Image (tube, rainbow, N blue to C red; front, side):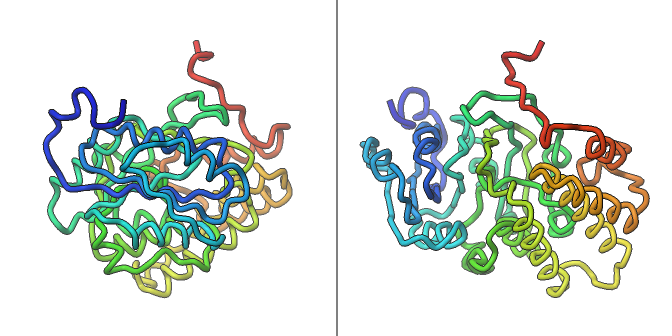
Length: 329
C-alpha cells in the first residue's frame, strides 16, 4: 500500500512536492527514510534519492522499492550540499522538501507542512515543523523543548541567533532557491543554517509546533564532529555579518549571537569528549553576555548555562542517555 491509498483521495489537490533525500553510506537507515516519504498522505509527490557516491549497500536497498514516484540519481561523492543541490535541480515540482537519509517523517508531514505553505502569501517561501528525537534503532524518546513559539514566523534574525529547524522538517518553494542560490558546497556542516539565513533575509518562513519529524541520534551524526561544526558555524555567522543581514552596528545583538555560538560549541565539544574545550567555551559565553533576560528567545530555560556548567564539571557521560518513550513512566 503506497501513500496514495485509502483516505488520501479525500485530500485537496495541491501543488506537487519533490522530496530530496541525499544519501551517503546510510543503507541501514534508508529503508525507514524512503518508506516514510512514500507513505505520505499528500497526493502529488516524487521522491528523489541522490546517492552521493555510497560504497555500502545503498544501491541494493533502493532497488527493493518498486514505486514509480521514486527516482534515484547517482553521482560521485561531492558532499551533502552538492547532493541537495542536485536534487533541487532535478526537482519537477514547485515545492521541495528535504529528508535526511537517517531521519523519517510521520505520514501527515507533507499534508500538514506543504499544505500550510500552499495557503500562505507568496512572500512565505518556507515552512517547517517541530521534531521528536529517536534512538539509533528508531525508538522515539521524550519530546524535546520547543524551538520557537507555536505557529511562529521565523526571521533571518532568529536564524542568525540560533538555528531553529532541522533540514528534514523543511518544505520550501523551488523559486526560493532560484533566487537565493545553491547550498554552499564549501561548508561541510551548518550549510542548512546558512541557506535558511539567506532565504529569510528577504522572505518569510513559518513554523508549525507539531513533532512531525523523527530525528535519529547516533554516533555518526555530522553534528557530533565538534571541530568541524565549530569552524563551519563560525563561517556561517561571519557570512551573515558581512552580508548585513542584521545591522552590524547592533553590537548587543551580535554579542548575544557570539555568546550562543560559544554555548552551543561547548555542548558539541563536551559530547565529543573534550571537557576542557567545553569549559573554555562556556566561560567565553558568560564573558560575552553575562545575562540572558529572556532565555526563551533562544529556546532555553532560566539559568541554562549554569546547568550546562554543572553538567560539564560533574557528569561522567559525554551525552545524556536517550530514554525511549515506552520506558518512560
